[in-house]
Length: 237
Ligand SMILES: [Zn+2]
Image (cartoon, rainbow, N blue to C red):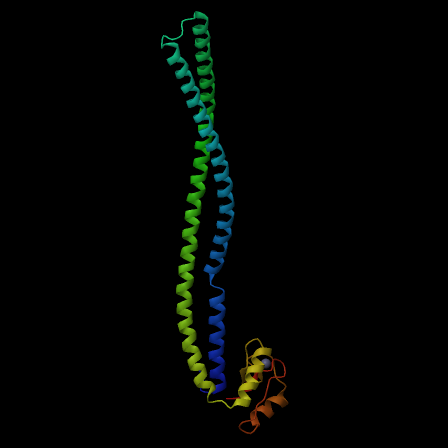
């Protein structure tokens, strides 16, 4: 850390800029973004698979209701047939044929239902696999959120400390120089003050014409010289 206030101020500002940049570009932010994108894609697939499964499950219930109702009808005819109230052999024969037809229909529907159950079970497994995938990615997202919160808290503490120190240094610099420094920082990508080392500006690493170097070195105390190239206030130590 320099004893020259302007350079000390620059050190704090550089540290603050780095912390702000680190905070904005935490790798977990990219991880969280990709997890969220995956979750959106998974949600679409899950909705599709669930809709397909529900449709087949409805078909399964419909077949189940129908087979049950056919069996009930067959039983009802059977009950009447064996009740002794019907004596006509022709009528009894017709009832028997009716029962056989109802049971044949029921049996066909049951075969059909078995296929539907198989399809529904396959879709259940698909839904379960997507839900498992979703749970995993949700855990990734939660992990990234936790790391981000933790990193942000650490960086914010460092930022607060740097800003406090920066303010203390800024208090010791006259307002006009401070304004010049701030405007140079805006123009020179964060560099408001730089050492003049030999005849090189340490802000932009460019060589300063020797006449100007001499002028800067022999200027009366309090004179502010700026680098012609980057605009940083040149500090002669
Ligand atoms: Zn420069």
